[in-house]
Structure formats: C-alpha cells, structure tokens
Image 1 (cartoon, helix red, strand yellow):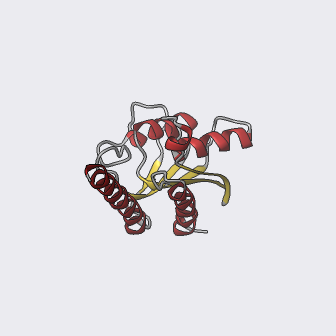
Image 2 (image 1 turned 135 degrees about the vertical axis):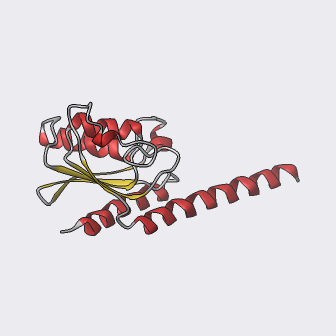
Length: 160
C-alpha cells in the first residue's frame, strides 16, 4: 500500500463527517501496513472541542493496541494538523504524519510552524504534505461554500 491508498481511506472518513454536517476531515492510523484506527471530525455532533479526526484516531489506536506509544505508526489526515493534534502526535510518538490539504489558518506541521519537527521536544515525526491535497482541499472548500450559501439563504428568509 502507498500514501495515496491510505489518504483515500482518510477521505472516506472525511465524507462520513460531511454526511453528518461536520467539517469533512478524516484520519486513519496505520501500523505495519494495517489500518488500526479510523476517525472523522465529530466536534459538532459531540459538542467537544477535542473531537478532531486525528485525536479520535489516536485515541482509538491506543485503546485497541493497549499502549499510548504509537511508535512506527503513520497517521494519514486530510487536513494539516492543528497545534492540539500535532501535540498529540508528538506525545503518542507517532512516527510519521501524511496530510492532504494545507491549513493556512491553523496548520502546525509546516504552514504556521512545524511542531512535529521541533527539536526541543523529546520526539519528532516525519511529515509528508500535499498527498491528494487538491482533492482534500476541494472537499473542504465545497463544504464551506455550501455552508456560506445556507447561511446567506437563512438570513434572506429571516429578512422577508
């Protein structure tokens, strides 16, 4: 299997999020060429700020494997991780992060900063960016266009 294969699996998770009205972000965690955890954004559904796809996938993997150390694991995520998720990667010792779309407002694996390769931390992770990035980015852009259109339509109805 290759990075594109696993990113397509993360995209499947993102589509599950979108079907629930969530921001379409998905993640899969792979260990020794096997997906051990899958997750998608559930912040709105669960009303929990911690319910990011990456956090949920890391948590599921830890529970399933019976360890907080996810050495040799690779996390695939459709959007560049935020500071919280990048921190969880470092603390859980994930070996590598592969992401699709860059996040210019919150990305912390290369865009705003790179927490995964900060030498002052006790763990660094390899970063591969832009895998199926156009597809991942368009999914997010389309979601937010639709959301803006719905809000505009709602305001219009209220003013009638």
